[in-house]
Length: 194
Image (cartoon, rainbow, N blue to C red; front, top):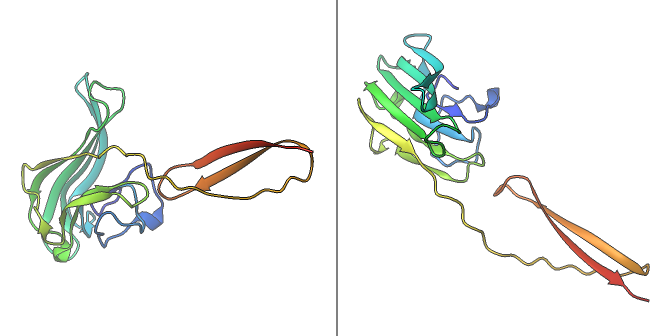
């Protein structure tokens, strides 16, 4: 959770704290961002930032609240929240929304991102970015949704092997990418004959 109006889902490091907003998606850190009002904010000068659980005994949310937080270089303040539904409640799945109270400006010096991106910084989008799009106002509610992934294309990798010893063999090809999580492993077996 960053005072500048965004969170890094799954946690981050000090290098994920940025006052200058980004056009999303963006492969530069921070990634895995939920940004209801990413601009240079200064809660030490006015307002507060809080996080809590909220439940109605059916659904449970993590609520991150920026209340009356002052922009760094202006007297404008902004009030907004992120609501993140907890998996396992009645409405599990895509249950992330942004809710807005009083918004007095359009971001510090007009620099503002309202959007979200994935952990790789290669998918996501903006609802508003530095004057383009719709600026949220008091009462605006936005829902963060995603499009399920589709299988990618196929790529054939070729190789040649020379058998030195007679017998069975198995070779494992591994692949990593910033396009998916983990390592893909494909085995290939054969037999060297005399």
